[in-house]
Amino acid sequence: MLKGHQTWVFETKPTIIASAAIGGPYEAKGPLASDFDLLHGDIRLGQDSYEKAEQKLQEQACETAIKKAKMKKEDVQFLLSGDLINQIVPSSFSARTLSIPFLGLYGACSTSMEGLSLASLLIESKFAKNALVCVSSHNAASEKQYRYPTEYGSQKPPTAQWTVTGSGAALLSDQGEGPKVTASTIGRVIDMGLTDPFNMGAAMAPAAVDTLEAHFRDLDRDPSYYDLIATGDLGRVGHRIAGDLLKKHGLNIPEEILTDCGILIYNEDQPVVMAGGSGCGCCAVTTFGHFLNRMRKKELRKILVVATGALLSPMSFQQKESIPSVAHAVSIEI
Amino acid sequence: MSIKKKKKLTPTQQEYQQFAQEREPKRPILKNCVKAFVVGGIICTFGQVLQMFFIKYFHFSQENAGNPATAVLIILTVLLTGLGVFDHIAQFAGAGTVIPITGFANTIASASIEHRTEGYVLGVGGNMFKLAGPVIVYGVFSAFVVTLVVISFRALGVM
Image 1 (tube, rainbow over the protein chains, first blue to last red):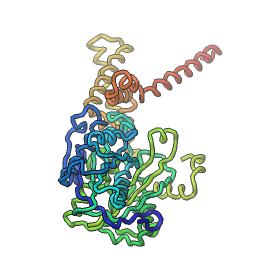
Image 2 (tube, helix red, strand yellow; image 1 turned 60 degrees about the vertical axis):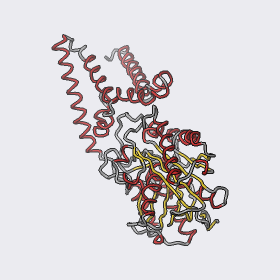
Image 3 (tube, rainbow over the protein chains, first blue to last red; image 1 turned 120 degrees about the vertical axis):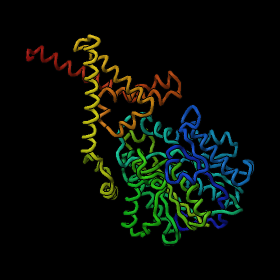
Image 4 (cartoon, rainbow over the protein chains, first blue to last red; image 1 turned 90 degrees about the vertical axis):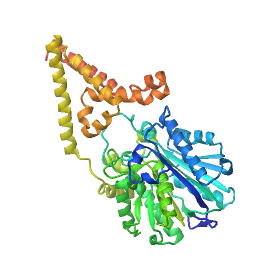
């Protein structure tokens, strides 16, 4: 049901009956390692290309989630997945392997919550009984496409972020036990004219703030309603900007409940990580792994995840276009 | 940022950019310069040692000894790139590894490795000079311009 301008409230409360998180070698060294279902030591996952490795990540995430729910893939009506690679081939190719009816998504790093919102909509409208959301990113595959070759020796500024190698999947159902999706706010595309692809946090922070404001306005809710509010991949730089911007806009979110997946996923002293994690996989593995695990342990009861995406392409950046951003917020409760 | 670029931005955008800039960590320029100087200096000293080595033991002339010394540096860079170490050194050293021949060798090696999956012709062949290409194009072009200037000066009898 639509509430306010841009928020959906799910009355049937679609349930996340199972979720999975698969990670790579850098994620294994991070503080959330124990929340992953599977961690790979080899960034190629034994495949002959990074793109195939990303496909494998998605397949493993989907298969693990289905297995955890004690289901067969035939029980899942729709698969909604996305990633960052050109024409989202890792998603399409893993959907070929899984042979579940497939809807491909692209929302850059906001895809995880875009997918979760749409899957919830499918369940709410009774157009699906079970729907699977899967999102992935691969550090080397993204670097290759968006920036320089992985082995190229360039010095990254302290605002740069490290793309997460990982895939997260969530299986939603109209019945069963588990955390429930209660509402989601679809964000507008915000462009503050920033052009530096090595500073995505600053480009995406205004989108996160805009969506958060819309969420609390539409639902007439106070931020203290949530135990945790997490942005997707603003990193340390964007997180600080977003926090101050929220205060400036008069939305007071207590500092202890406002966090960011890009900060949580890596240790501060991990080399090359710089300002934190980014990529579709960042928000997906943190939410579908870490946060949902904490909810199942009843450490968290109500969370709001705001996945932020920078909608640039390697070409748009070269043509001196600015970086527009979008953010989608999903509220999960148990 | 240039004034021209700033004019296109709305006041809100300008205000936000100012707001964001105040909260961003700055590039540690001085620290980077020192690191670049030290690492670049070490590489060049090593190059000099190589040059003297070739003069002393292989009887190269002072002028020709630069070539095998450069070749050794290129081979070492390519090896380190292939082993996945060079990018970590470069993150520390910055311009220190970019400016000497090591930077140039790394651009070619890294692009070749990266695009190996697309085949030897379109992948390696087509992308090898992806990053090095502009250096060659503008390097050759500026050499051409400089030559023209020198020739005209000579024709005028200045030099």
